[in-house]
Each structure stands twice: as structure tokens, then as C-alpha cells.
Image (cartoon, rainbow, N blue to C red):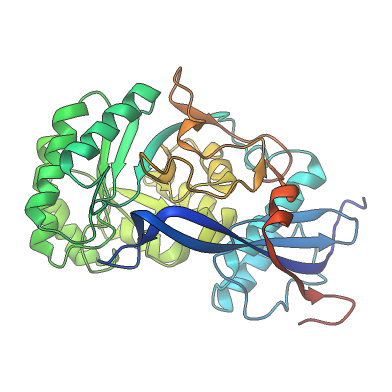
Length: 385
């Protein structure tokens, strides 16, 4: 190793697997529990090669750069410069590229990314984040959500976040808030995330009032402004007591900071998968400077690294689980667990992965058994693709 690894090649590996009892909700584009259904899914791993043999790896890959210019031939340690180049070029592929660079940096120095960032959190408090409400079976009624919350409490989880039905009456949603609150309120933190599904401000207001009655920790992305209206959410904050969590649909660092400055949110949503560790840590520090918290969106090693690197974050989101689908994520990492059983009953936490870089090794036996394609998209030997 020369201590200054140069990016020489980037390859994309696509794999596929079949998820059982899951399909697209008839009320929207979100995946939901559908007994007997099968859904063939694909995902990509990005591998970034360097001239000294170190390879950065990241998955999932939400998007790809329109051009690899400004990445090949650059030092993999020049994260800030590459981050700004991609941001100015339109932000496509920013998260995957940036996280690959962090993986390389950690492997160069022999440390996990959170240690490079000065973090010391080896254990991360975790909340369950449910799949959205089903049409039948578990999570199809307020009482079945309450049953699942009680089960999660017994497993050691400190928080329970509800993704309700994409359709259905507002009255059913307020009944859901009450059923879960009556069952486990005061014993675990509760969150409600309608993922911008409410058609009107009044709908969001009614659900917010219901959350107030049970002291929910936050109400997230409630109505159909797509989670970015400064005026609307500032007005909502005036009328309800439950804190708002906003920012999932906002683009990058600046739009999320603007939500905070405009008084449109109480907590801000970070997204290290979509926007990368560099952008996410800038946001975490901006929120910290204003006395607020950041909550990471999504599940996976990079989300754990991001949370472990900052003090002002409350929960790791173990997302999109269901009583009959406790392990919805493809098992592409060795000795790493994002199933419902990952949390320790003793402290309600999951561990921060400690291997150099993003902290994990890939299970190439499983990946190769499910391989769809493997292609080099940029190679310094051939010029920039």
C-alpha cells in the first residue's frame, strides 16, 4: 500500500432473490404483506478498485453518476472534493460513491468508518419500523399492530414505529394510534410514519392530535406535500404537541437544513444510503449546532456507522419488518444481522460493525448463487466511461 490509493476501476454486481408473501400494495407503490405472493427483487453492489488493491464495497446502490469523470484517477481519500463535484453535477450516485470512499479509507487505516469520524458508540438503541399495514392477517387491524408492539417490547426493543395502511380512513389511523398507545404507551417510545399518504393538512392534524394523547415521540412525513413544505409543517407544529420528523424526501444537506431553520421540523432525517456519510455527518453537526437530533433513515451497515459517529441520534431503524416477515433483507453480509432477532434483550441495542471501512464482509457464496450480472462500468485503463 502506498497510503494514497487511486481509483482505477468501478464495477457493478447485480443479484436477485425472491421474497415470499410480499408484493406491491394496491393502494400505492409500497411493498406490503400479501400472503402467497412472491416478488422477484434485484439489488446492486458497487465495488471501487484502487491501484494498491484495496476495494471499496457498498450496497444498496440507490443511483449511479451520469458520468464517472472526476472519480477515476482521483485519490480515494479526497472524499470532500469528490463529494462536491458530484453534488454540483446533480447529486446522482453521490451516496454509493461516497460510501465506497469511506469503505476504502477505513480499510487503508484499519478502522471502521465511525472511528475515523471520532465516534465511540459501539451499541445502538434500536426501534422496530413496521411494514405498512396489510389487507389481511398480521398488521391488518389496530389490535394486530398493538400485538406486534407488545411482542417487540418483550424482545427488548425500546421503540416501535408504525407504517399504517396507505389507504383507509383517517378514523382507522387514529384508532391505530390509540390501540398501540393503550397497549404499550409509557413502556416504549412510539412513532407514526404515514409516509406522506394523507391527502390533506386536516388529516395530518387529526392524526397529530391522536399522537398527542399518547405522547408519541414523533410524527413523520404526515401529508401529501411530500414532506418538504416549510409553511405547512411550521403551522402543523403550532397546532400539535407531538414532535415532527422531516427530511426524508428533501434533497441533500441544504434542503434539510432549510427545514430546520424554517421551523418546519423538530428532528431531522438523515439518509446515509442515498446521500452518503459525508453529507450525513455535515447534517448531523448542523443539527447538533442548533440543539436538535438527527435520525438515520434506512437499515444497513452504513446507517449504523453514521449513527455511531454522532451523539445526537436516538434510534437505529430496523425497518420494514412484519410478524410473518421478520427477515426481509437479503443476507448479503457475513456475520451481520438486520433481522428482527438482531436486537439484544439486555439493552435494546444492535452492535456497530467493527471491521475496517463500513464494518462488514460480504457473503460472496450467497451473492454468487444469486448473481444476475457483473460488469465494469469505468476503467482507467480504457478511459472514463
